[in-house]
Length: 149
Length: 314
Image 1: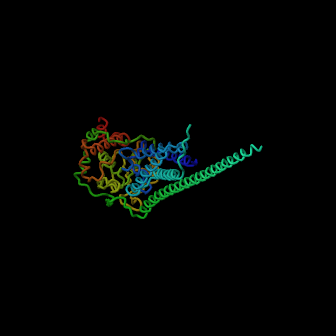
Image 2 (image 1 turned 120 degrees about the horizontal axis):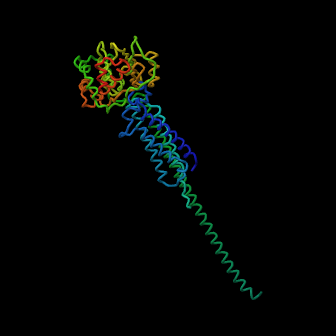
Image 3 (image 1 turned 180 degrees about the horizontal axis):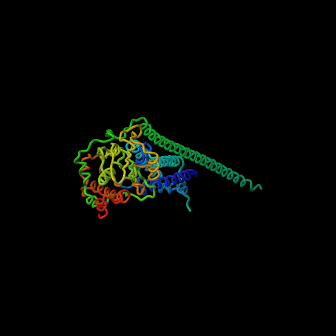
C-alpha cells in the first residue's frame, strides 16, 4: 500500500473539517440567520438559512463536521495500513455516504434554493475528491496482509 | 578384491538403482516445482487480473460520479431545470392598496397588548452601537434598508409599521406586497413610495430590490446613498433587513422567523396582529414592543409619553 492515499486523505479531511467547522460556527453565532445577504446566484446566506440547511433539526453544517471528523480518523496513514476489512470497507462506505449527501445538497442548491454557497461548494468539492481518492486507492491496492506477532 | 567383485557389482546395481530413483525423485521434484511455479504464476496472474478489473470498476465509478455532477451543472446552466413549480408573480413595488379598516386595526393595537406578548419567538433584539449620530432634517434618523423579495424583511415590516404608527403618520399609507414567491411568499407592507412624518425623528426607508426576478436575482428598486451603503456594510455586512436607530442602536436582522407567515394571505396575518394567543400575533406584537422601546430611548427622547411610559411600565 503506497503512502499517498493516507496523506492525501488526511489533508483533504483536515481541510474539510476546517470549512465545516467555520460553517458550524457561523450557523450558531451569526445573527444573520434572519437576514438576506444579496440577490445573486452566489448567496451563502440564502443557502445556509434555507429549509435544506437542516435535517431533522440538525444543521447540515454539523453533519459535515461529523462526517469529516470520522473521515479524518479513517484516512490517517496508519488506518490505511490496517488489514481489517471493516476499516477498508467502512472507509469506502463512509465516502459513499458523503457522496450521496453532496449530490442531494448540490441538487437542492441548483434546483430548489436557486443559489450557491461558495463555502458549501468547497465542502462538496473536498468530499467528492475524498470519494475519488478513496475509491481509487481501495480498488487499486490490495488490503495489507496481517502480520502475526 | 575378487571376492568383492560380485559384491561390488551388486553394489553398483544398487547404486544405479538408487541413482535412478534419485533422478526420478529429482525429476519429480523439479516437475512439482515447475507445477507449483506455474500454479503460482497462474494465481499471480489471476490476482493481477482481479486487481486490474477492480481498479477499472473504481475508475468507472469515479467517472460516473463526475458525469452525474457535470450533468446536474449543465442542466442548470442550460436552464433545463426550473427551481420550483411556483410561478413568480411580483407585486407592484408600491404595493396593492390595503383596506382602511385593516390599516386602522394595525395602527391601533394598544401598547399594553404589544408589551404583554410572549417573547419566546424573538431571536434578534436591537443592539447598542457607538456610531456617529445618524440625523436627517435636523432630527434623529431611523434608517431601514431592506428588499421587497426578502422574506426576513417582509416579516420585519409588520412590527416596524405598527411601531412607527405610534410616533407619526404615513402619507400615503403603505400598500401590501409579498416577498418573492420562491423566497417564502411572505405577505407584508412596503414603505416604498410613502412619506413618514413624525415630530420626533425622520424615517428613511430604502428598498434596494423589488420582488421581480431579473437575471440571476431581482430588479433594483432603490440604491442606497454612499453613506448609507458604508454604514450598512460596516455594521452588518450588507444583509437585509438593517435598521439603524439614530446611530445609537441597530437591528442587524429580523427579530423573528418568517416561517409561520409563508404563503399566507395578507388578511390572515393582519387578523392575528394584537392576538397574543397565536404565534404569529405574539411574534409581531412582541417585536413591535421592542421596537417602540428602542425608538423611545434612541430617537424620540421618550416621547410621546403615553407610548413610551406604557412600554417602560410593561
